[in-house]
Image 1 (cartoon, rainbow, N blue to C red):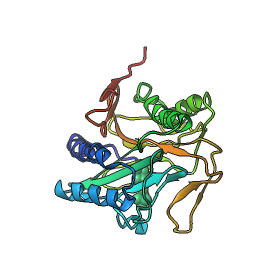
Image 2: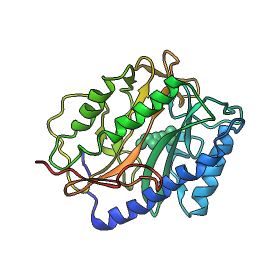
Image 3: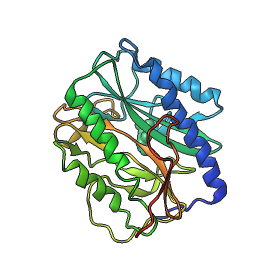
Length: 264
Ligand code: MF3
Ligand code: CO
Ligand code: CO
């Protein structure tokens, strides 16, 4: 399993593609209103990506038919945009954007709430976001890679929610998914250590009910087995000399771009 360490030139390119992916998410927010179909949202993102002279990364990926994934309520991930899927007040919606710019991929996702929703839905989205954010002040070179899953699991264990185990974060660069693979739960691993120049995603999927999911008949859409709500946030991050840089940080997102996490 080869883990590519990106050089300065590659990191520059990744910053550009990651910024663009983050802008797709920032731009789509205004269109997420009751009555809009997920195909309409897909098309708006597609046009935005093309206008910036980039390529949507999902379309054609193992046969995926659209530009982005849109996963509503009990859909955990890989939701396929559809003309028949109209958003309604109270829905929680994951939009997962992958773009390619100048040969480099970037991948990021966040939750949106349609109008107003209920307490459980808010709190699930908040926990999913926190479970990702929690890892940023921890990550630094030299730590074993399972520190990420351990951090997420320790946190989610303090909530009523569960972590989906079938999907993981991934190295990213000139390919969409590459080593290292980042599990979001605690597991035993003592061989892979974080190193400056690694670029990967972290993208925990958190369920309101049980952790189990299944794949629907379209062979893409992943749904919670108990039909409980599901939420996911994703960022593409770079390991730096002393911490990490959140490459897909949105302009208006209330986190730091760079974390200095020197050991004491
Ligand atoms: N963007 C997803 C990820 O975070 C992968 C989507 S694959 C697709 O890794 F084919 F469904 F687009
Ligand atoms: Co990803
Ligand atoms: Co993604």
